[in-house]
Amino acid sequence: MWLTAADASGATKCVLDLEWVDVGGGHKLIWQVACINIDARGPTRCFNRYVLPAVLGALPACATNSALSMAFLRARGAVPCGVALRQLAAWLLQLPARPVIVLAHGAFASDMVVLREELKREGVGLRKLVWMDTLHFFRHAFRGLHLAKYSLAHLAEHILQQKVRHD
Image 1 (cartoon, rainbow, N blue to C red):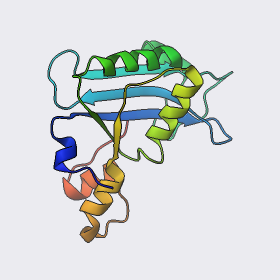
Image 2: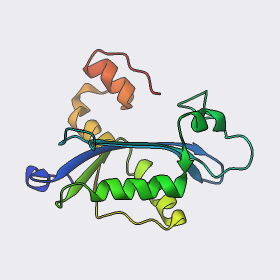
Image 3: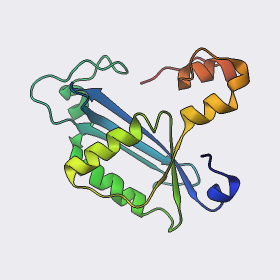
């Protein structure tokens, strides 16, 4: 099912990105959560928190950040996961009282699943959100290009002719 113009009309649109590490057994731990209200301006437009994953010892290797360590996270003011998720919940509540559409690349297979797991584990609830997976959208929108990959970096390179780094 696609969101239509009627679905999005009047809704607040936010882009969410999680960074996480796989600790085995299909369990993933968030180390950063970021969200931007693309309809807003000003100091409350963005939410960004580094998270201290609940692991004993060193963090597992991270494909998107080879420098990831507890020291890296502490240097960036990381907070425990429950704290970060309660702060995210509060940030979402300050958005206008209308539907909120959360866009995430790979949401249905990754970000939404990992976030829900961590919210449940931490006992944190969020306001009602409508999720849109931009990976599915781009695969549909650019199907005629027959791209080998639909990662954001690959799309930026082939559609925008720009090289990007994932940090």
